[in-house]
Amino acid sequence: MLDQARPAVLLLARIAIGAIFLVHGYQKFATMGLAGTTKFFESLDIPLAGVAAPAVAVLEVAGGLALILGAALPIAGTLLAIDMVGAIVFAHGASGFSVGDGGYEFVLALAAGSLAVGFTGGGALALDSVVGSRRRSASVIA
Image (cartoon, rainbow, N blue to C red; front, top):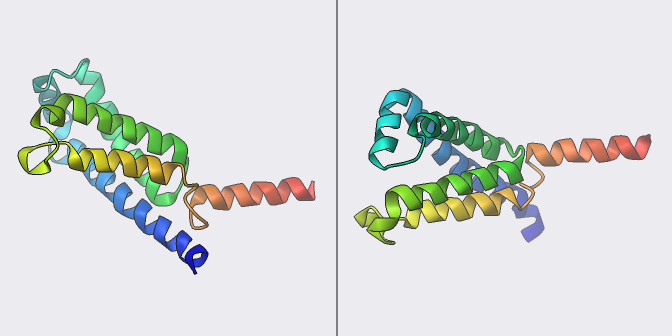
């Protein structure tokens, strides 16, 4: 039973975590705008804010989509976790653990979830699995 549920559970986890990143990345483009995001990053003393802001926005959109689709999961999961470590260091760490106080508990959960999803293989419903199984089948035939 657990083996049968695994692909659906991994899909739900990928969609949930990926959607959070996708929305946050989209906000950096559409709601705040890259100029506003850059100013916010500058206020946090993030180095090279003019480079970091668009890079983070692209990473969160592309990484969120990658998690949802199950594509390049180890890369996407690792980069999104690094993104969240940056959020802890520059934005949330000084407030402590509790998210109610602006702390880092939610950001830490996103980092851990990104790594967990990134390194599980994504399950049978992940693009990585579909492409991987086709490659394995083609190499067996050849």
